[in-house]
Amino acid sequence: MGAKLNILYIGNIKNYFSDADAYNCSIVNLENSLKATRYLEANNDIDAIVCDYYLPGNTGFFLYKWIRAQSEYDSIPFVILCKEFSAEIYKTAFKKHIDDFYVPSVTDPKDILSRLIYLTEHKKPKPQKASKNVVSENYKMPLSKRLFDIIVASSVLIIASPFLLLIIIAIRLESKGKVYYISKRVGRKTFDFYKLRSMRTGSDELLKKLAAEKNQYKKEEVKTENSSLDIPCPKCSKLPEGETCSPIMYIDTHQICDYWFNIQKREAAKNDSTFVKIVDDPRITKVGKFIRNTSIDELPQLINVLKGDMSIVGNRPLPVYEAEVLTGDDLSKRFLAPPGITGLWQVELRGKGGKMSEEERMRLDNQYAEQFEGDNYSFWYDIKLILRTVPALFQSDTV
Image 1: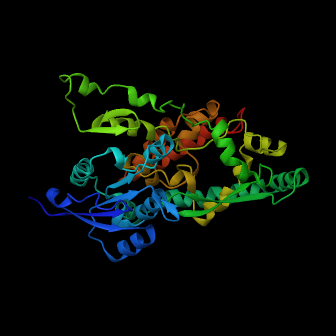
Image 2: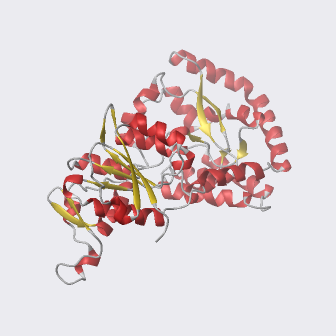
């Protein structure tokens, strides 16, 4: 028998895990999130967490967010208990990547303990934060790339300054507010990103609503509701009647095996979109549409290049809300490359109308970043991308 499993239960179902010793598990029971956070700050020997959804003053989702932000607890199994089944809570738990969801009134606590033992034995390692630090320490901008950036950025700013002055006056005359726009972006670090303002002031407040209606990268909704629970498990279908491939769970009036439950859980999580790109954005002004179609709005980014925040060629720096969800190794690989004004995905697809799937964008970002994994950087490859950028500058839509 292996080492005893230390489980923290945050909730008020007394003696629910009374048989924990029989499963070589030790239970610490705390009533609320305040006590739980204090306990976790003082103890690092917890192997798994079980939490009631309804907690005094907040919910288990709030506590889950705090726990995942702590490096020592960001990969341990976390299970939610909800006193009655709610399709909305059920789907939200999956989208937040909570490890499992149970209704204690219809679930044998032994099944939860068995599930926790399995999850702790097969939990994924947490290489994410360490790997990013290694990348930052080992990365060095190639000298030829940095010199090229400084020369090009300085030259273009000097030549374009009279024209930029006219554009700035036009922006100011059309709508009130600053003529430039600053936002936090994430490349190899977080920095202030400069653009000429192409939208009406206060446009950020409309983003959430527009993202739900016009997001180019939004995936088609999958109608799950309770109907997905009626789909039979393909593994169980091959077994004799009465037998199941894994323990049975009871959700509302449905029965579903543990294996098929987790398949549905992963499918629900896939419905989230990472990137946000608004199609035919109504927030854009008339001058804004012109400077976007001609990419003039991006000229202030040459200041970012001179500061060393960006390069002429690289992967586009992401808004913080997009970068936060790029947590997998296959997604975060893009950050091996420096952020740039233009790059591979822009010349491949932006000049063809700006229509691009999330998967295509990630693939192209990763493809460009691969040359920074070793000594594979090619200055001439950057030059080719710049030459291919020229015909992509003039486009028909405001992407």
